[in-house]
View 1: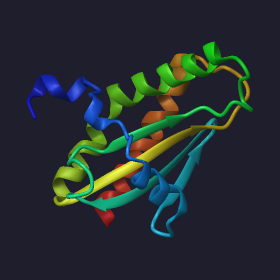
View 2: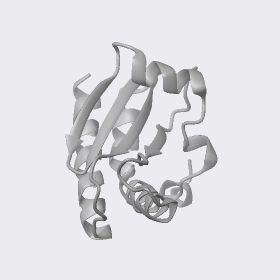
View 3: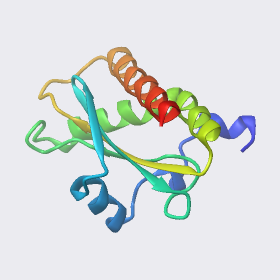
View 4: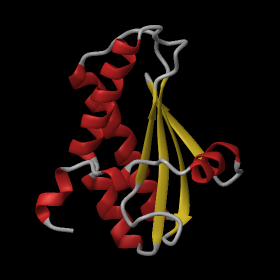
Length: 136
């Protein structure tokens, strides 16, 4: 991947596969960590199942925000924060080699947060996840 490609969020980085989503939420191999208002559920995969880039799903439940406008705003904030901070995780996955990763960010709060705070929480989760992938 070129230097230019590190700050993007392409379609192949989105988790769309129903079977992978099912495995992520219903298999014992998945783990989770929280940095309120976000919860990160993740699972290591073989590189055949996923790209070398981690695949991401962002979920904002309707019970948190009834209006789609607010749900979409939160999803945009999380997506942008991930795009800016994913490099830490991508590098740690490259170091381990042959490891794919699928993950889901789930919003837990029923209040809107400032974009800078959301970015801080996403960066915190990605940093912690990068450390865990290095340790194995």
